[in-house]
Image (cartoon, rainbow, N blue to C red; front, side):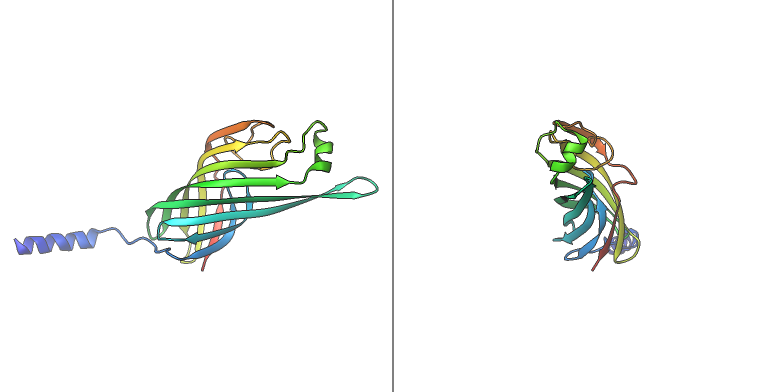
Length: 194
């Protein structure tokens, strides 16, 4: 009986799946676009092997030529969220999470050009429930893509976020809900981990 148990333990040990990549305490920076449309500098920190705190920030500056003067309008886009990596391997992780996305733009001059009837409400937010894959190209470099659910709250001044896919093209003053938001080329990330 002991030899049978030893043989069984040997077979299990040989056929056991490879250990997952240990990301506990690792910090990463790179580029990313979220489901809601925030494109910019991405920051990630793994608080545990499976729980990742992530954020993305972008700045948008537009110069509007008005003949005798130039108006400069600025915007800030950002997102903050958590991702739980529920299936982890040596070369890829699958994750699900929750993320809040915000966009603010100073649009007074720009609004007058695009839509003279627009109000001064220019804060947009969205709630994202991303499902993603992160593939390691090397020990410190990952490539990722995501899809998921997007709840997009568009102000009466119009969309401030430039996302793609379901839920992103909601008209001014509405709420857009997208299941399967994002697209394979629009929600990519490239992250370097330290």
